[in-house]
Image (cartoon, rainbow, N blue to C red):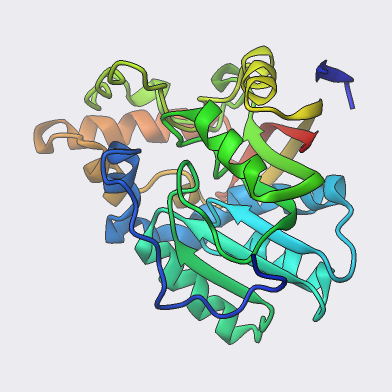
Amino acid sequence: MDGEIGSALNRADDYEGTDLTTDMETNAAERRRWNDEYWSSVWPKREQLTSAVTDILLGHLDLVEGERVLDVGSGGGTTTIAAGRLVGPRGSAVGADISAPLVEFARRRATDQRAVNVTFLVADVQHDVIPGGPFDVALSQFGVLFFDEPTTAFANIRSHLVPGGRLGFACWQSVEQNPWFVGPALAHYVPAPPAPAPGKSPTGPFSLSDPERVGAILVAAGWKAVERAPYEIVASVDPDAIVDDDQLRFLGVRAESFEAAQGVVDEHFARLRGSDGRIEAALSVQIFTARA
């Protein structure tokens, strides 16, 4: 650790079919993005990057038998299922995500892996009340990066925990520290995102990269004992785990610029590519922990 930055139900039953109806004005842009079927179709490839952090994140939380866990922005469910294994049959894990396709994907994965103490539901944790609490632990593996009202979201997460409950989440350090990210190289070919509406915050992979800002958000949301631990990890991944042709189209690269954009991606990856053709991605991440 590099020090402090700032000072219902007893179990998760099967909530499938009880997905929450949220205020469609909240997180509207991210709601549109994450409910595109494209994301669920490519999610297993993307997990080559994100799953490199799972053991580190869970190691910070010291989950024990019988605890109740809330996974915020649970995506494909790998972290939720791993947490469920750690808390055992007397515990439970609930994964909440704004994306209906990813929640359905996670439910199938949990069924295939016989993760009987794990459930998933569609919800916007920025505002929704999540059944299954009060929880002992809230965690997130890159799932808290897409709140357009982060202080509101982290206050809502805190309200779901028992007194003294634990929070732990992984987010990226700065874009400059993550050379695998191809976004800056593609800036000429991809439309710039619209400015946030008044009172809203920017969202995206690097929205919580500034440690001082994150610490201020958490303290404002009522969290205590906020700590940060930075990590440098190298993950060997397929190039299309980072970007593929379909993603270029999804990001808005025009047909007349497509070949040029592909060339930029190839050039960007050339210095990261190993002899086996895979990308040696240096991941700069940070784990934040806090207490309710």
